[in-house]
Length: 140
Image (tube, rainbow, N blue to C red; front, side, top):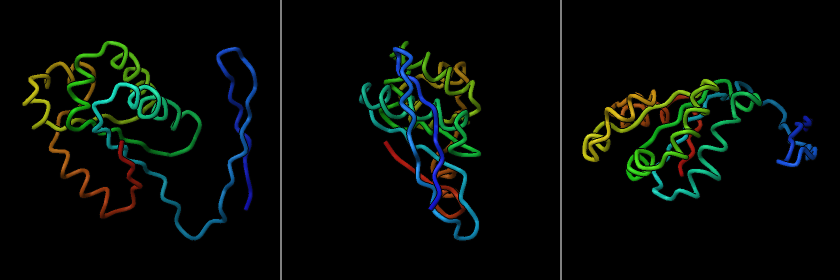
């Protein structure tokens, strides 16, 4: 097993390089990630979902990433300016964004999310496709 060293800096600019073990290749590598964000908890959004989503493409963790916003996270995002700003940074890295159109319509925020660059879709179709094909899926 090989490893690679990634350079990370803390807020005080201290190098906290981390070694990430890389398993030996066993055929085709799955390099697409679907992140399903359904939690209505702001701390989960800030400290996990949006933080991780903002670094996965620039650091080369994945070739393609999609953040799916579903359920209570839609309402949380629509009401929280800080999360909206974090989502803008995620979008700028190239992560694809979508939300459950049924949920966003129920919360009456579809237009607001679309203005942020979030595509309102029937997320069940994308989730099913991801689960049946070559995507990794993680949920929060």
